[in-house]
Length: 77
Image (cartoon, rainbow, N blue to C red; front, side, top):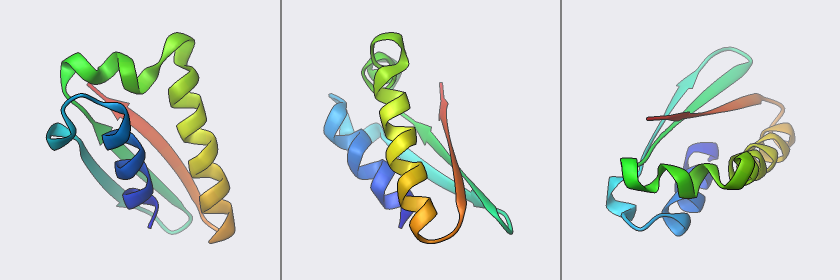
């Protein structure tokens, strides 16, 4: 569920939605969501001063709290 949420948001932001790749590494309590986008779209996902990335992390935290898990978003170049 969390992976699909991040994928949906990222595809809406970038110019090359076919190059968006999201993987999830699940632990007992924490899930790590890894987001990969095209190099040219990296700035769009991060945003000015990291505002877009921070907003995505806030949404992810709120969603993961509902299902009583902890999730961390990593944007990978």
